[in-house]
Length: 377
Ligand SMILES: *Cc1c(COP(=O)(O)O)cnc(C)c1O
Image 1 (cartoon, rainbow, N blue to C red):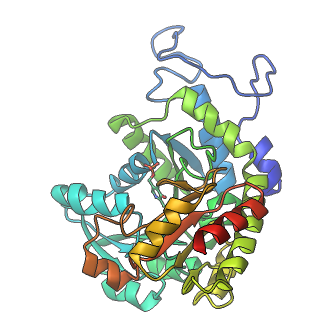
Image 2 (tube, rainbow, N blue to C red):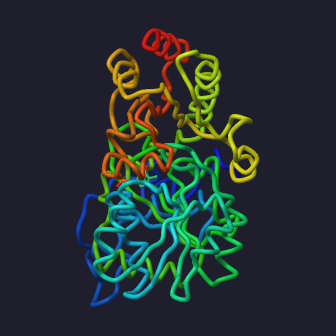
């Protein structure tokens, strides 16, 4: 089954009991047992729910793994995966990981003794140099936010394997439609499904896919023990969103390419970051990792004042955090998503005050270009 077909027919795409072509919302907490311990596969909805199960089977199929798990948010998914580790363990992570991931690692998980080092994982030698005797995992985000840096999934996973580390990939930006980290040797893939998978700015959710029976057992144990599950209504919304992921990603891609083409020629724009640009430092690796470059673009307008003015003037780009929705969104990372990072560290990473991030939506591209044209002039 090819990816677009899988989006629609993967997992459990209908209700076997009634023939309903959309999986029903099983709004239920507990299930009747015939006798003690004898049941139809469900006992209590924290442990398992048929609507959530359909979603978990779907994401498992889309990522090509052994089991899928749905959580109440992307951060709940990240946290559940990190619960695989113990006090005294160490993890190497991409240096510009999602801010919430940085926060949970450095302000919460550090308190229970999980240690971390953040490195530029686009440099495989830097990964290897950061590995310690107690390192248990390599955690990669690619492309990253907001500079769209790319890590070679195949090489990075190979280094991890050599040192007996688990490779964990946050695949939120590319989605399984474009990128399947398990094909390159990753062990665990996770998503903020709030973004492209949901796609309509109406659900907060997280997904995890593992590629071994042992990890399936372990993550299910953590999911059931800590309880950060996704409810049936939101599971259903996510299944609904995922059905159109293919056509949405194709269109995001087309709009992004046209917008990038406009931006690189604009005199007010000093720099454009997009993995699809041949001038992107890791363009070739982006092509190797994924079948598409995605709908996220960042560009520099030179100063905080100019960025503010741009954001005030745009009509169709909604000033908001988040990404991956049908609506085009615009933000200034230095003041919004990355404000918690100290200014000198931001400079070091290249997140300047004039950097603007766009999540290209599905509006008519001509309207989007005209909108930016007006705002930039
Ligand atoms: C948004 C996001 C998260 C966190 O997901 P939530 O659903 O907001 O909890 C994690 N990783 C990436 C790359 C994200 O964009």
